Length: 308
Image 1: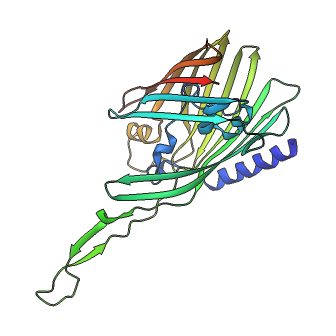
Image 2: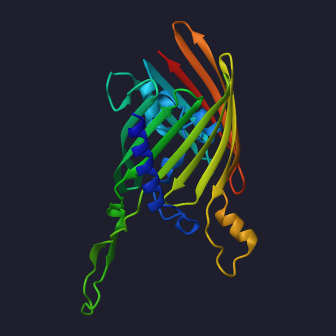
Image 3: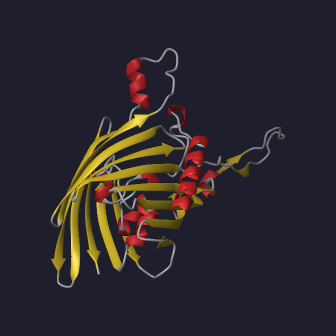
């Protein structure tokens, strides 16, 4: 399995190099809602938990973590996003034996997930398919865990529908010709494919430090650094994010404008959670927030998860 992990990691790095994002590619992909983080731990740690995430939160962060699930787990969360937009999320996972996420040993988890992406504006819509693939590898003799997650790898999408219809008189028509209905053909757009390469090191039995490099295909790449501290049935986490890239500043652009274009929208993130027994079940209540550097308000997430 170690060789399998090395092969997967090598392929992931190769794909990353071929699809590396730049400042100039920002805003050229669609379906950006796929990038909204899900799960308070993922928000608090800025996605540095790629190698350690488990259960229902792994649906977004790294599907390989689904292999750690042993029973039924369900979650609901609400996120205050941008421009007075609230994002409601609900998810459920259940262990059904050897399905699309599997623990090949006590050290290696692998997962694959398919997703249907659908967007609708009035009577015009776009639909596409995508895959998420992930691996988690824990070293046998060191407190070190690696995680690799490729997300939103799929087909291009385009809008189609009656809202794109327009009535006009055909060009070069004779005077007095009646108008005809024509449909505008929308251009295709790509999904926001990304690759996460993550490492987590356990300094103590209850303190993990992590780093994740995220290669985006259609925006600047990010590096996140985070730490998670466990105390009994509670956890506390914090992280920060920065952009990584070698783009050259265009001639004539001020340093302030370039810093704005090439910087990240989000800064420090933090969160905490506690597990509470409720009868025969376990309830996990958690909160996380990430600060906005400019333009937007800080984002906050509340989540309740049940283990059945």
